[in-house]
Length: 177
Ligand code: IMP
Ligand code: MG
Image (cartoon, rainbow, N blue to C red; front, side):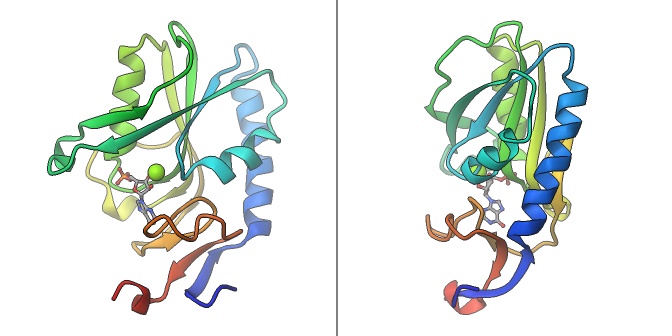
């Protein structure tokens, strides 16, 4: 346990086990045509690495980095900081995200990927925080549902820190003050 963490919500062992289950589901659901996994930087990195090892069909991977336009977050507009390397025309896409919170990010990315010609876009997210949802969007595959608390670790950050923690935990309140 890290000194700034109040409690662990999801352990490394739980994540490893859940990724095995998700990998099996994805193998089965995409048996006829494999998807391109599109990881959203930077939060999805540890989850994507763990998940993809448990997928046995011939997937490809790519990454995107998006950020909300300052001041207009509620419109759902996102700016592409790093775009995909290749065309996704007529491809099946599986977005890999760390957490679906308000849903603004994945809803906007989903629209973007359809604009780029994807024929199907689904979402796999390590965490789901349904209490905060503003956009009507749901991940088809969810690792764990978490309560309305600010969580860090396993890719998730607070001011760019704690992404390297091997578990998902709740930060101590004093770290915000
Ligand atoms: P959205 O609100 O669903 O658009 O979430 C956008 C992004 O906010 C996520 O991809 C995370 O990077 C970040 N985020 C949301 N909730 C948390 C949290 O509890 N801890 C750390 N980052 C979060
Ligand atoms: Mg993120």
